[in-house]
Length: 273
Image 1 (tube, rainbow, N blue to C red):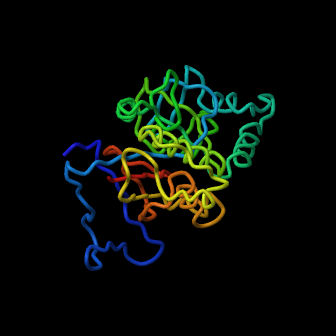
Image 2: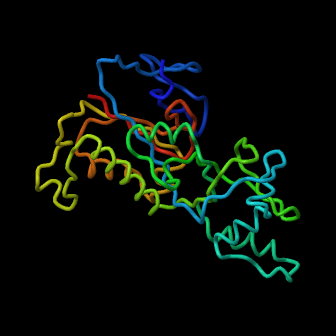
């Protein structure tokens, strides 16, 4: 099995046990569908982040803490990227920095690690670029900081020499990236963009291309939805506006699988033909 064609999500539940349905309610194991080689598929990923500042190289680490970026304290580099550098003469400068970061990132602060395997996969479908793009990154949350060492704790394993960008996520960046994903999919299928404001009046009922999808599967992180877009169903509405009224099913996950790798805060869309 080609791991680059594996996609899906981890089951999640707010209360009680975690259950799957495969003819009947089940606990544990894996359920899903296997497509034969005769079924054409197109799979895309949206991470919904906006890059903050340039790419940096990790030059010192300590466990899960990034101590230095580009041979400078990691926290200083972050603040420089944000234009939020506090007054170093103030002994409470790190407390001020933490307060500023909390105000700036209501949906969290993230780093995007350059994912060479993902970049290679996307390059095959013409999504590569001279500079690192947000959808080619493995996005992980910054879970804490050590003010004394000016270091950042990130929920990911990394090595000296790895490269990353700081990222932010909000409703606008998520909408922009979801639209980007759909636009690139239409481009790959040689399908025209719908006239969004006149969608129903124009009678747009699906992708108009040489490859007509039979259906779609969309798996979104449970941290998206109303928590990110402000209301339920916003992602589904945007997908319909961009791709038309095609049959679609999916679920909210506690981790999303794309190209054989595990992601978070993402949406994975698959069309089958």
